[in-house]
Length: 426
Ligand SMILES: *[C@@H]1O[C@H](CO)[C@@H](O)[C@H](O)[C@H]1NC(C)=O
Ligand SMILES: *[C@@H]1O[C@H](CO)[C@@H](O)[C@H](O)[C@H]1NC(C)=O
Ligand SMILES: *[C@@H]1O[C@H](CO)[C@@H](O)[C@H](O)[C@H]1NC(C)=O
Ligand SMILES: [Zn+2]
Image (cartoon, rainbow, N blue to C red; front, top):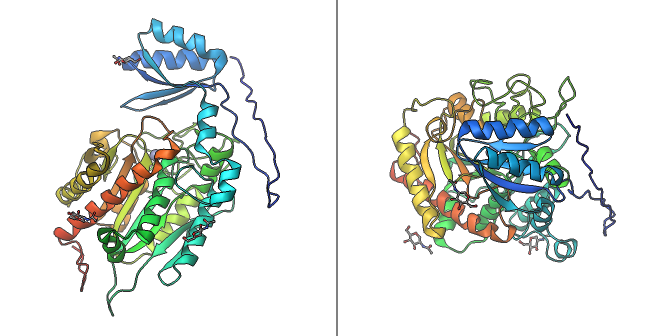
């Protein structure tokens, strides 16, 4: 087996505030393929390539598989794919090029601050939250939902406009970016925050006023930062296991049926290591405790990418929760609202077990099971890879804004809350 050495060029520069940045050049000249074929052929290709190079990256699920091919393995890959009748479509010829285009140029970010035509690192997202909370100090505040292994805070924004005397609004919680490489999730979430705060569309201002919002754009900031500066396809946290391998999948680490489906007990698994025990990760432990402390939690919504899919609890069972029919009706309304924006058709709503694959230890399932939160949804946003063009972030941002509107409108129709006077949960 060839032990692959990654060359990580560290590109240093000094900007106005003398901070240093690492640039993610690990994937110079790597190619990104979308592959299709029958399961055994795909498996054969994967194992053949892993045998040539253990760092070969294969990201597969039921719907599709993506492979990341280093330049020196490209011809071997094409040959085995051809022999095995696996259809390989080249999505990106040079991944490093794609990653560069996702980030703001240094000049632009200095001139314009935060925007939705580029992807930003954690510190910039946090600066945006802080800036926006100072712009609307009467009804927004920065909140901290937990801590991370590397000592960051999981920061979010609370938006809670004044309500009539004695009225306690239902809480709408948004969790985003638990998987580090799904960059469109945090970008869409800050876009949505911006809509809630600045839109003059009366439907959106009404939505803003109906809830006590707790919105966390990136609940795995260590992983996101690592994905931003070193390895674009990093998914996990950054904790160090006893055997030296790094990270656990934070969406396999929650204390509900932990470790059963679609999770690994190998700390070196690049994708779905479930952690050494439920809530072994400080991120999930602290965030779950923050969520437990919220009274009146009505909506819990998580954003992932990519699949254009709306998932309902539970992810590891085909059994339905008692208000499943309501969740379907509310979810359908959400998708109809979203569809009006770009005519993008989402699959679902349905349980992950029925629409994608069974997975255990996810946040949505824990929230539903442990806290009995009535309305719990996971969106897999759009795309055909982990790279969604930065200049098209607003498309998904608008779609998500409408999808949240659809959720609220249908939930109100079904009597889950009454926005004007007294509030009653089912
Ligand atoms: C194979 O890939 C080509 C694009 O390169 C596509 O047009 C075709 O539909 C694919 N066939 C199958 C069976 O997936
Ligand atoms: C801070 O917020 C204000 C008002 O929303 C905006 O005009 C300004 O550009 C923001 N600054 C940065 C650095 O994002
Ligand atoms: C507000 O929502 C209603 C009902 O869905 C819709 O007919 C109307 O066009 C929306 N208004 C705006 C400004 O989007
Ligand atoms: Zn995900």
